[in-house]
Image (cartoon, rainbow, N blue to C red):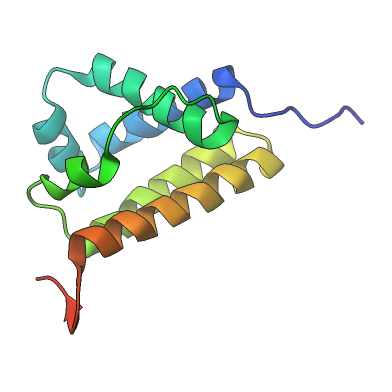
Length: 128
């Protein structure tokens, strides 16, 4: 049995590009992303590859502020995070070996929870 394939830049690229191709076509969250990103998808995908490279490979290439960026988005609802995660899980399981997919999914779930809390949690309940 061959050794498991480690996470590398090629895997990050395949996951990011495959996932966001799905996001762009999704009826629930596609319009939110497409409106926010407009014609800048190439630059956005490069930034997302830097983000996931930093998260998974500790490259330090990403220098953004995801929470501040997401706080400015219009039309995002708490339930959109589950749709985002569903598409991410599906793509990760198709693109990555099982052990790597699990690592990506674990990180994505943590990131989604953090963003959701930052965007919607208010003492006394979620923001409407």
